[in-house]
Length: 191
Image (cartoon, rainbow, N blue to C red; front, side, top):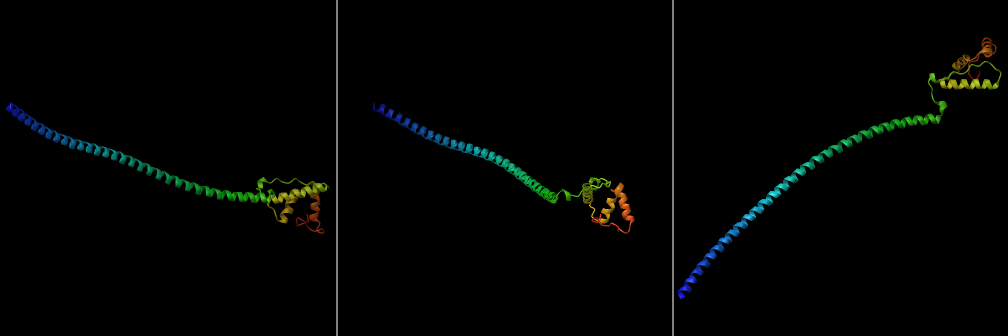
């Protein structure tokens, strides 16, 4: 029995040694798996990092391109704004000049506005009625006619007025110019 026990202990010791060898082999396998898994995780992380970096670089490149396009657009808009502002400033200055002329014309009144010769109506002829009202109206119309035509010289005023005299007044004028004793009318006030 002792020999059976010794034999059983021997088998048991062999089994223990086999178990120790298996344990050592298992420990080495576990360590190999740990290294492989660490390498795999490291490789996956590096791949993920590279993918994310590539995506970030791509997005950064797109953002830089958009930023450059926006800068170019802003520069063009700024130049256009400057050109528009200068054009508007020039136009405003022109309009200020026109406004000043208009204010001056309105301030002086319509009577001082210069008319072209085509715009001036001829005065009515004076037929020589003895009405003070008709004489005053004729002289007033002639003054306005002279003003509109820009006539300022007395000799021209007198000679122009002669063209509007008819009938009895024309006869009176003819007598006045031929009779040297009364003196010739040369000034508008004498008329």
